[in-house]
Image 1 (cartoon, rainbow, N blue to C red):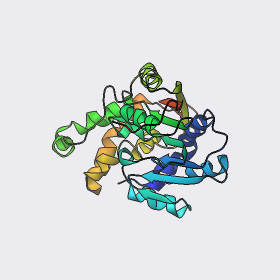
Image 2 (image 1 turned 90 degrees about the vertical axis):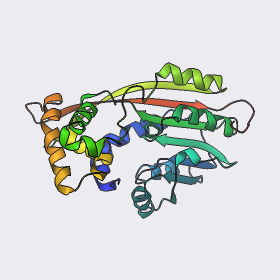
Image 3 (image 1 turned 180 degrees about the horizontal axis):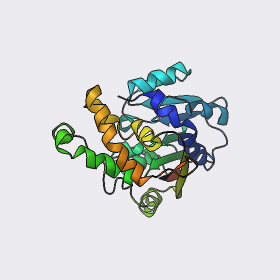
Image 4 (image 1 turned 135 degrees about the vertical axis):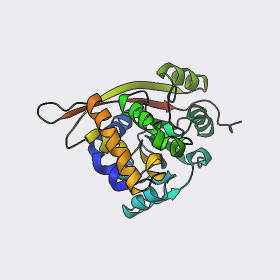
Amino acid sequence: MWDPDVYLAFADHRGRPFYDLLSRVGAERARRVVDLGCGPGHLTKYLSKRWPGAVIEALDSSPEMVAAARERGIDATTGDLRDWKPKPDTDVVISNAALHWVPEHADLLVRWARELAPGSWIGAQIPANFETPSHAAVRAVARREEYAKTMRDIPFRVGAVVQTPTHYTNLLMDAGCKVDVWETTYLHQLTGEHPVLEWITGTALVPVRERLDDQGWEQFRQQLIPLLDDAYPARADGTTIFPFRRLFIVVQTGGTRRSAG
């Protein structure tokens, strides 16, 4: 279960890629702007400031996140972004830190590009840090004897979760789009006790939490601490540097509108 408060503990750090993504979306005006994977809606609110007068459509698979977004005045709905279909007036589609949960997201981007009207914009930011020590530590603890049976059905993401920038560029150029793809590794300066653990508690550890009772959850966290502290040692001033790689995709659709298939 997603916890909006835990996720928002690092709101400033998590929000920066969203604004970096939006800075490259060139739509001057928009009738409808869609936020796919809107989370708690704290960033969705910016879309109405960027495109005044646009209808803001928001979707997330987590009922808890949708409830938090609604509390912020966002007309969000619960649903799977794989089932989403653009309305005729959709001019901008944004998906920030959501597509990595969908194995077939590259095909999904192509489908959206084909279903949207020519000249529409798609902007996606995808975390690409699944081979980092933080994720390796979670997998290592989950394989330990006391957790192996409980965790065996968790689809821990490893390997080519996110493809190369060239792969997405070729795929979307072949779909007739103008394409802008880049990568950024953010060096987040975190503070507090065990900050990397607190960061992944709001994201990568969500499926782990769902399978453990309170005691098991606390024991799992305690076993992660030395691994994470070793991989991400605190500086003398108490700051912990947490590298985080992200992939950005911005496209403007072209060609004749047609249905996917």
